Each structure stands twice: as C-alpha cells, then as structure tokens.
Image (cartoon, rainbow, N blue to C red):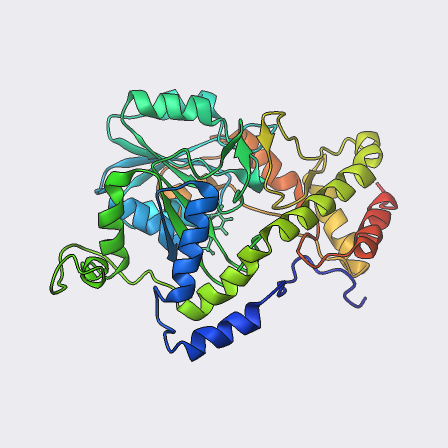
Length: 378
Ligand SMILES: *Cc1c(COP(=O)(O)O)cnc(C)c1O
C-alpha cells in the first residue's frame, strides 16, 4: 500500500528560506548571530523568562543543566520512567545515579505522590517531563523540592506554550529544556533551548555554552580578553538554523491553532468509538492548557495495539508507539531496574499508539485516519 498519511512531515510555514538567505548574506553563520538574538528576545518576552539560550538540541540543554547544577558522581536524580533517554542520559553523563519513578495513569506524567519516597540524601534534581504537552502537577512538585533544596529542571520538549494553572510550562523549575527537533511543534531540524529562571545561573550558563570561556562577557565589553574559566562545550547552533527557527516562531499562533484543530478533530471523531471498545483517549486536567504536541490512544492490550499499527500501515497510514520503560532498558537494568518497579509505565508503554500529527496534516487526511480506525476489526 502506498503512503497516504505520514506520521510526521516537517514543513516550512513562513519566511524560512528568506531568513536563511539573510543569515548567509549577513556573513554571520556561526552561533549567536542576529537570528539567534531574535529568537532569544522572542522567547524571553513571550515566556517572561529572564534568560533563554538556543542550544544545538534539547539533549544539550539538559547536559548544560546537569553541569550548572554541579552534578557529581554518586548524586541522584529523579526521573519519570516514561520519557526519552536524553532526560536521564544528560545526568548520567555527569556520573549521577537515576532513580526512576512511575507515572500517573491519567496524564502519564511523573506521579508526584511517589516523589517523597524516592528522595535520598544525595538527591540533587527532579526532572518533570510534561508528556504530550500536558503539565505535571507542578504545585506539589515545587513544594516537595523546595522544602529540601532540590533543583527542578523541566524537560519541556513537548510543552512549549502550554500552561499549568495559568502559568507557562518551562517557567517553574530553575531551568527548562526545549527541543526543536523535526518531530516537535516548532523546528529547525535539530535544535533546542535552555530556559533559565534562576538568575544566579545565567552567567555560568553563557560560559558553559561557549566552551568554558567568558566569550559572551568579552563581546559585551565586560572583560578585555576572553579566556578559559570553567568546564564547557560547544552548545551554540548556527545562525542559519536560528533563522529557520525564527521563521517558525513568527507563525506560532497559526501553528498552535492548527495543532489544536487537529487534536480536537481526533478527540471528537474517535470519542464514541473509543468508549465502545475500551480505548482510552488523552486526559487533560481542567487546570492544564495543553501544548497540542501529539494525539495518543491507549488500547486495551499490546496485541491490539500492534494489530492496529499494522492494520493502519496496510492502509498507508503511519502510526507509532512511544517510549519503552527506562528502568527495563539495558542501561536501566545496570542501575538496578527490575520488572514490576514501575507497573503503570510497563502497562501503558505496551498500549500506547500515536496518530499522525504534524503542521501540514489536512482534514481529509485526518478523515482517512479516523475512518480507518472506526473500521478496525476488534
Ligand atoms: C525530543 C525529546 C528530547 C530530545 O530532544 P533533542 O532536541 O532531539 O535532543 C528530550 N526529551 C523529550 C521528552 C523529547 O520528547
């Protein structure tokens, strides 16, 4: 069967080509050029975050956060079991021991009721991941972390412009990471950002991002030569990528409106079918404004999930599953992960299917998907 509906299709939405041409004509195609500055300013203004730094990926933004928190071998970090490997890898790279906790069965976000029991004397950070762009229970998380002086770093790869109780995701923790990978709402192919809410971390963040040098201060005229002052790496994206990203960000309202429409079309079109077949659709708490990152469903069993994916594939429709439980991965088992540790993640990881969802998805494509699902022989 020929392809009829892609799972993801990265597209240009505005001035991407024009801005990339400008970046080349500016003759500033390395990092921190005019388009990077435009992206920083836009984010700082729209999100009300004191400092935003573009990075080469969300993974790298997370690595920067681990360095900024001075994570040392033997320190512990608390991570939801149901997330992408980068959330944990960035900290394990610094020598941290991850402690995986299970997710809530309703939002699939870190289960805040399991936090207290997971906190150890050397726990240095908690990493909430706003799965599918729906906020974690940030009130409880911030309170538990605050009492014990544990840092909170939000992995907000899915959650840009989403809100929890009226407050933007990414503005709760001392830091948050964003992703502009081609599968995310806004993209530059590869890319990311570190949002820094704690003012005390800003100066060192600039140094770490610039290979451990005080180059940013030098360019601002604050020191008369720049030199090696700390550990660091090269976390700046090319200004050509920032130009692409800026064009996407300019269209943020249009993109988010389209994604909202796509999400609602699935939710409405599949509601009765789901109820009739014991299929669970996403749950969005009333106090959360989601970021419309994806549309998932939970099938009753692994067998049915696999059957539905291949059934759709035969009709030219590409759907996919998502994260495997981290504690059962090869690396997770080296940190002591055993079957049964995180029962909710073990269960929903088998049941979850993600439907085609991207900025170019048309209503007729969605109609094809919804019709096919309704005709799925259970
Ligand atoms: C996509 C994603 C990442 C990694 O993003 P990159 O920009 O590819 O490094 C990290 N965490 C989550 C939750 C993601 O979805």
